[in-house]
Length: 193
Image (cartoon, rainbow, N blue to C red):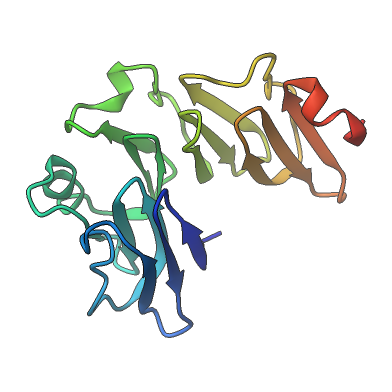
């Protein structure tokens, strides 16, 4: 499910129905470089950077011109969605695999963000405040990786999930029957039980 609006640390992006992107906020003028973007199907406002995914699977970038991140993501192809965690960028491919880089351009799979083996992923969600990544699979199950995962978070038994959300302390899943499940620091979601 592509984003239609998205907030980063200091700016926000909006995706119009015509595939163009609008931006608001300020990062010395660099993150807001979305002028001329077209044919965009998904957006992500990252930490002082803007990302767009075009319908052909290529990536657009707005941010510091000398950024290592820029040089790498502009070479990505077959992308369906991009998400970010603090100083990490992840791409979901159209075939359902996930890969990422850190702010220095290093492969994220060799860090605490191991997505090797993630397959049949429908959507990804980065929790930028803590630095973890949630993957919703096509079969309704959920996978999780990263640093600072909420204490007690366990999604291994989740099934029939159609949407996910995350916060600093919790991960939430909406089931196909309309019920909500949550995991993490219990005091933040115990009223759901």
